Image (cartoon, rainbow, N blue to C red):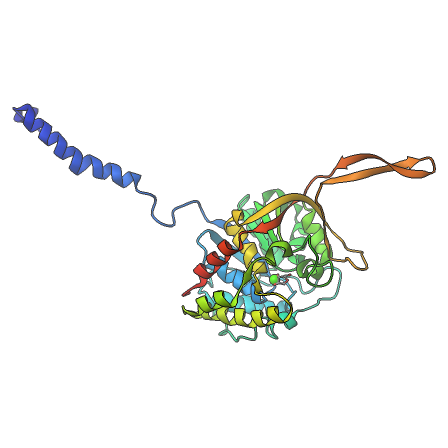
Length: 365
Ligand code: RIB
Ligand code: CA
């Protein structure tokens, strides 16, 4: 353009103002617009190891409906139900969610060192609140679950969060077979354990009780662990009011979860809780948003021999231990030694925030 064409300063100023308003500002604005929905931080890659299981089912559907998570695999472990039933249930769940792209693999057939104890009492004869989901359109991944876990961790070093929400048999088998995965795992968010008494008995939580030896291996592997146990699960209760809210929307997953919650709340009210304990879904919720729980670093060991305490997660709250040494025909306390924590134990939870997240993700699906 011939600058001389702008004889008067006024014309040039008007051109300049027009250029800025029509060209510069829109360009600047476009670059400053917040990134379109869904282009935030990359989704967290997770592997869910599960014994589906009613609350497992809700945890899986929460994960599959959360953009913050990228479910890389689902591996099945016996616990609430047998390995065979659990695999069929997991396949029906991913099919219900239209996610046959996710590898679903069978794992161990029994705990490492005890007979399998199944929990149809709490989960229904089919493990899914006696709700008959449509047969799965998906097929099982042929790999053994622990091998799939190992392969996926090596494929995505430092990116995988393991989310075991059943007995930890598969996780223990994986780390025992290939200890090199420990430094390659981003972290482990486990539903299990308790520092305030058990749900199976006075001391043990069901997942740890389901395979104490496996849990002790997992808690001592050396990777970052967040323990999402009964201490917070028992505070995270879906009530009949929440169920009524979810009944106002519909969809195959929505309606299935309503059925599961109705089955569970009858049991919860009969056995002393004013709502459905969202144990497994809260572990997934913690993988989505770690700030949902408050944690304290503790040394946690799993009792494997106690007559009354086998399966208890024994947490050292002060991370210290007295040092007893021989003295004058007896022992006496010489010092108090530090103990290195190996877990972040969830001691509190923003329950309403989690439940709102859960209901919001499932509503209408
Ligand atoms: O104690 C609760 C845990 O035991 C949950 O994972 C539930 O599914 C059962 O496996
Ligand atoms: Ca479970």
